[in-house]
Image 1 (cartoon, rainbow, N blue to C red):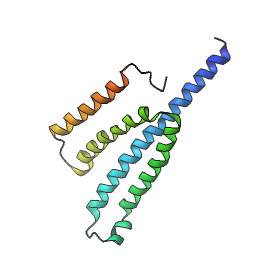
Image 2: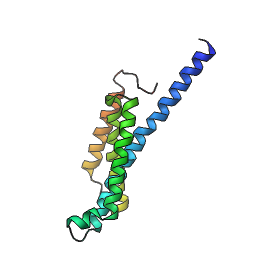
Image 3: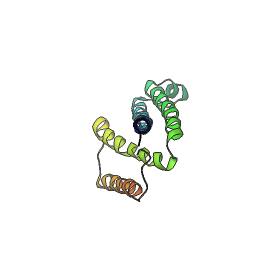
Length: 135
């Protein structure tokens, strides 16, 4: 294969890996948005509409969800939905860890089993003989 063809293929692979960052950023934005939602719920002492929509944590959560929607669209431009969407389940891992660390909520055996099942599902999806979209 001529050198310029290898260079083009290498550049295309680098771009795919850069586009994969859209998926990672979408997961992080969704996770952080959910965490801000919990902070908003804990900080609200009254549940009237004005108190909710002016709560700084609620507003930050909305900003995160807005950014997640934009970044997710960019990810879907570059990857099939069937490839990108299973990664969104990583949100469950981040939120579970954050709930324990930030809010001192317990992690139950059922949480761990559930995350194990999710992990096995993702593994099975990608080991089913299909080539990953990143290669």
